[in-house]
Length: 117
Image: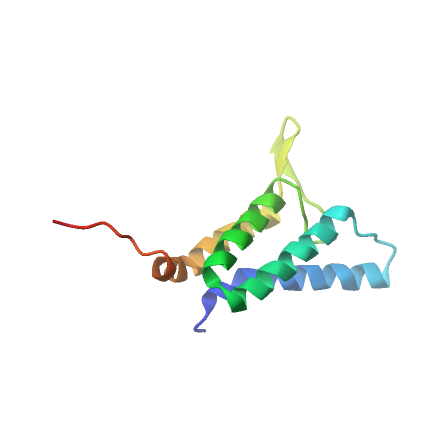
């Protein structure tokens, strides 16, 4: 697979599609955080094909916002934490995959400009 950097985005799209399927076939209801997540995901998907530099920033911010609970992709919200402060493990996995698969793309788009003398 040549464009591995799209894997976290595809997983996010699959999660939101599963959520919409689940809502359509059961009595689950999506909350405002899901619709915010859908909007951020649509924006990230468009930016992936328009401008990779902006995509990296927007998708990273989207994943961080999901990590702290400001948006969500999946119909079930998981929280792992202590003393009322929690993070969503789905977004931890997506963030790790984003940096692992996007490492080469980030190195190409944001090269290290140190001058070695």
